[in-house]
Length: 342
Ligand code: CP3
Image (cartoon, rainbow, N blue to C red):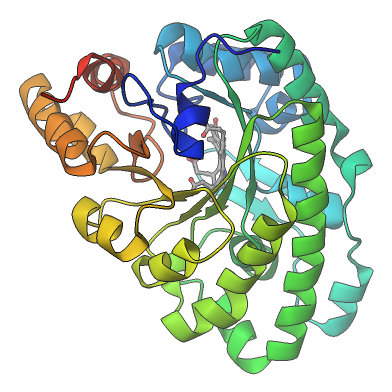
């Protein structure tokens, strides 16, 4: 199907765009009262993720309400550990929680390589979303990066330091590779299924990249991301490795099309490290959206000038926080959409 607005895909492929495309990580979420209402109807986050019609509804909300240039399928990176055999729960105001975690070799043996059949509720949500979007904007699919997924499988919940997961890398390198390999295989299957169902581009979230040293990142994280990117040829792939400023050159030399930046990374410096063959995405500090309209406008324009007109997708440097005002979010998006380089 032809898309009416394909700015994001053109920017991802390095083609010219009339203006900068914009979408936001966590655009479907608690900043929207409309989202909170559907989550209430679904009786919680996990039911919402697993009910394709409702997942499709909240996926489309930010397109209607905020006017973003792309939808991102409403799901979670934790559906992969669950499909492999470790079910999760989303505990209100605490976050993810796993009853069973991975500690030993036999724990890893018990996990299966997940296939498309294990995640039918996601592919079904994608099919419904594509139908309901009716070509208005592209749909982004996604998965967690193997290191970030491993960290949840070992820790069983979020962490400030991820020291248990890092300990596993230091003390059990062979088992770590065994687990990362299983996650990688599952992720390739999963992303291919999302693409088959209609995802126009896919993003890999390595949210906890920044807790690893450059050496560990290259041994236990970047190479598995590259393995995934090199196997996805159907659509552009975005890599967002939060905090991994040291890996920008590695991704520049890899098979991805788009590199996501967080707010610690300078636009011009990133462009000079990465070169002109990749599209950059990011990277406003989400906390800017707590400030005045005037400050939001000034800082957003400065970001757009710093990234320039070519190969760029505007976004935040990480997800929206739930207590950011919806009107400020909309103002950020409108500022990007109305901006023209002089
Ligand atoms: O709009 C979108 O970005 C699409 C939906 C999306 C969600 N999670 C929905 C969600 C995406 C892309 C994710 C990815 C995800 N999930 C990541 C990677 C991106 C990142 O933020 O770094 C991670 C690390 C997770 C794991 C996860 N899911 C955590 C740590 C939490 C709890 C934190 C919180 O905000 O409560 C979640 C829950 C979650 N995933 C929510 C949403 C909208 C909030 C749950 C709720 O509605 O109560």
